[in-house]
Length: 248
Image 1 (cartoon, rainbow, N blue to C red):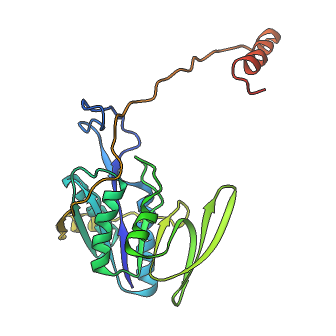
Image 2 (image 1 turned 180 degrees about the vertical axis):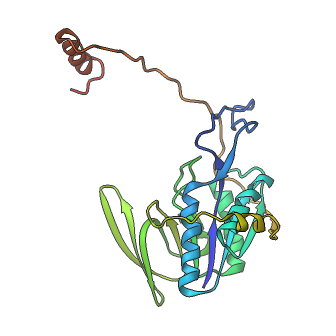
Image 3 (image 1 turned 30 degrees about the horizontal axis):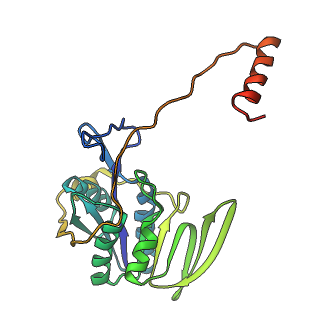
């Protein structure tokens, strides 16, 4: 089975993000970048597919030079090959999807696996766009699935429940948390990954569909109030919930 796993580099969730001087991007100085957490599930799923059906797993990322580090992580976890598409700007999700699609068309994978979303933009759009661009059915937010012959039966999370859908290979799947437990790379594998080759390609030229006009941090407007446990305090709390918060 030919498996393509698409991963992305994102700011660490513990990083304090600041808006850059251009007012449109984040200030990268001092920011720690990591492998997108949801992509850990997609890498693990690719490895499990290889263990079950044989074949090879290729990890692909689109981004600046620093994004090579997450490919080293994927190699340490056990993928067979890594492809880096250099695109410093990554204008929007569509431009990234176009670059992924160009690689996928040349590879003709049986399965393309992505994380359900990146934790920076949270667009949930990549799996659907890639599926459309490569003319494959896509199933998003998959928490359980199985392949029998050419048939894929997938369980996906929806609002308030689960949905079971059926499609056929080749297809695009986006992995939800709980689909598997990602393996931790061992130290010898981490050391070996540092010297493994990474195939580099230049991103294809395309026109972005979305333009960032401005970016700003949310303003904190809440004022905390501390009350005691006297009858007067309880009455005041009820009044505030009713008149100000309007939740009762």
